[in-house]
Image 1 (tube, rainbow, N blue to C red):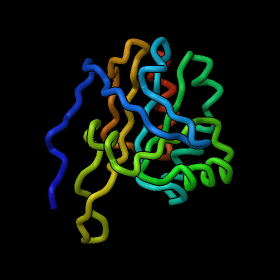
Image 2: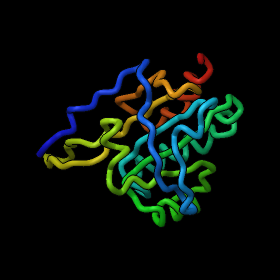
Image 3: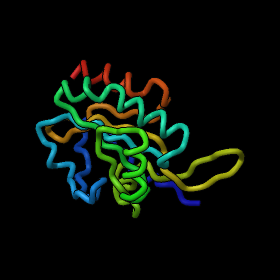
Length: 160
């Protein structure tokens, strides 16, 4: 199976812009958030244990993130409809982006080979990008531990 090895974004580089649908069929672009810090997190799938925990972690610190002039955007290959159910179930206060064609995932280099229980397959590797108000990547988390990840991100927001 092919792995997306072409794109390895680095801290200090411009974040790839995108336009995509979010819950409510709203179209958004990364560039519309210039002037704000963006926490762009990629996760494999709505309503799975690790993804639920990560999303709820961001939900639980959302007020503190917003107080730092930052927003949270989650990205997976799930549909807008699945995102809406996920948001409703866990009362998520942030947008989830539907990247069904994996355009954003490929631009950020998170789509690639994964291994689980001896099986190799293609999917979204859980990663987070902290993008400053000028659209520059300030931090990349390549290995996310869902239980403490939102707190880690909040701590790093305090250093910007």
